[in-house]
Image 1 (tube, rainbow, N blue to C red):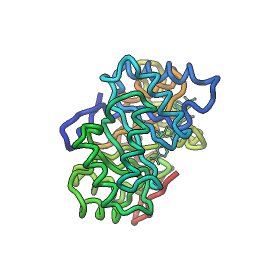
Image 2: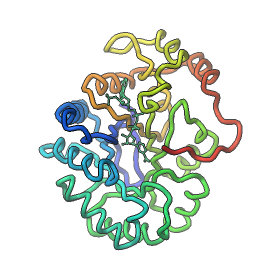
Image 3: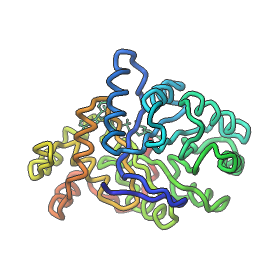
Image 4: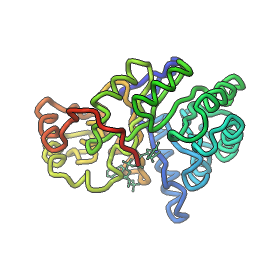
Length: 281
Ligand code: NDP
């Protein structure tokens, strides 16, 4: 398994699991819990959630899934920008810990750039770290200029969680490199294009035909994931509510894309030639 290392020295597998919309549909709960547990058992340490997801429902489902294996998981949650004042961040973190049923988050992120002064949010993150309630802090949906602002306040930002997939390659122009050079891990969200049109693109099927994994012929989704995972310093967090999808995502790590494969993908999803504003969902 490929890994990434955060600036505090903690190393985790470069493939984790997202949980947006997880816990929203009562009929899907058991399957979703089963999927997360299958991932954990197979060594996928990182679970990403947020106070926003289902207004706490995602955090509660994650809490249930990890109740007997908390120490095997690297837990990430996020504070909403509207809650990200100094006091608001402390309160939001306490609430997330309660929803999750844990004593500590491994990584706590500011969900996107908001109206509260960044200094306040970072000061709250520092307090939470000193109090042992979080292991590290970072941001999400921050472009280059916004990262510069973070670095002007503190050198300790551990991660920037951003939209990165074949459909959204703008960050290859500058942000991926800038974050890597600054020691900030990139967490790639929606790497499968949310399971939508991306996976129907013929270029993905064309590349998939050339690859095998231990589960059999490669799938377009596995190629989309292998593409995001090919770089260093990138931690991908696809969401899978079905055990079978978790298993295919894990097997995607066996795929090494060749120069010819990348050329096919570049033609269908051209890399950026100039600065593009960071896209977000
Ligand atoms: P993804 O790109 O991860 O796509 C999820 C969809 O892909 C689901 O419908 C899932 O189906 C399907 N899928 C998963 N694995 C496979 C597979 N092997 N083959 C075919 N289909 C598959 O979208 P998300 O938007 O969920 O992004 C991932 C995570 O990133 C989120 O869950 C969240 O944690 C985070 N995120 C963060 C944001 C931020 O602002 N910081 C914004 C958006 C997402 P099924 O569930 O049925 O298995």
